[in-house]
Image (cartoon, rainbow, N blue to C red; front, side, top):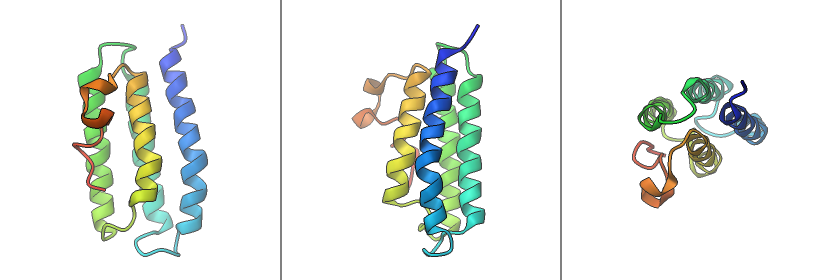
Length: 126
């Protein structure tokens, strides 16, 4: 049996990559804090988050989804701090956060339960 939510999360992840990949390519080495190594680290963190969500049960996984979101942003926050707070700024946030919100909703997290409908807001520092 196919997990439609997992398929939807994969599509969301591909859409993020289609947007974030070229952005990271354009900014690598040209903006302070941006390097290909840091970009690859951020992408790997997002991929691990995606796989965590895909591995969850189809429903009833809200606590596990929140834990995955907390882990992702803990990792991204630490990476951004190492880059002097310049790796993940407004433009990157506007790409990553909607992906996380939509992926979490796909795994059953109700937007209405979170401040401004944003599951990430309490975890992110960028």
